[in-house]
Image (cartoon, rainbow, N blue to C red):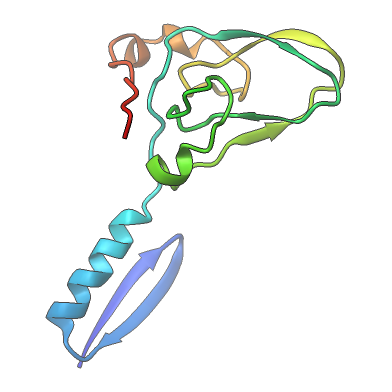
Length: 129
């Protein structure tokens, strides 16, 4: 028997395999599919939005939603390591919500879209699949 020791989410995990070459390949596939994903960039500009005070909103953090800047559930199949940011504004307001998904003040735009790493990055294009 072989023992595999690995670190997953800052916790050490020890597994013992009877057929290491078969089980290890299966374990590797599972580990790769659970790694956190980076958001894609759906827009290099913020979205001007009228928010209603007291209403709950879900801001898309993955960039895959077709209802930007809000979540449509696309992260469930395309970015399983990410989930929407849910927030409730205190009062009615007009705000700029981040479109590049790299803001340091989510869900609000902080100008990060003007930085070189966003300006030079490709925009995400939606597919029907």
